[in-house]
Length: 225
Image (cartoon, rainbow, N blue to C red; front, top):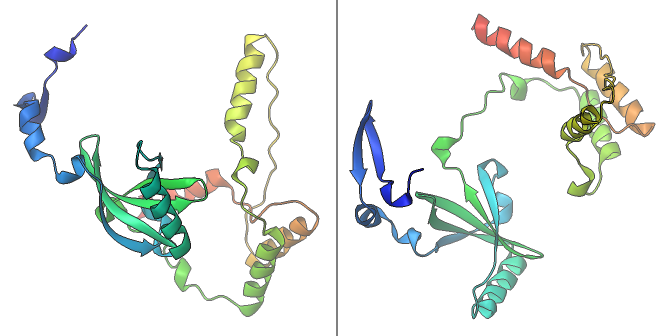
């Protein structure tokens, strides 16, 4: 057992070689954002790419700050703006977004630009699309359009694992989940028509992709490169 008083903070600059720092020394390096959250600017919520979002937190006012909190929430809701701010926690300075919601303000830590890897989609965005394909794809989207209700979605894999654990603990035989065998997609129009027909019959499914084959094809592509 190691007592907290015996723990020191340090940085390994070489193998098994550490520079030790006292709490007083670390406090000297703390930015102002370690004590106060500083709002830098306001931006339109619609302009924020969700790719930059990291973790989300609820913000609540301290005692005596309810009026200021309510005023800021109301102003941001009516304007459609979110606040960009600086905040330090867990020994790191974050750029955060403070966003209004119906229930109150939420804070989202953001990735810095250098932490986001550039997308590699090959020539997908340059591929020529025919008008008939575009119209069919748009129709498919309309058929499957629905209000976003996150409580509809569940982690079926975790639920199935829990059932297996409970069943095995009671000595029951574990039944295999049947998987639909899908042929590889060759013709885009045929695949779109099939998905559209399925959606019209009430089968809510988009274009089906064999995930295992897609991953394997990706690995082969990397090895070939």
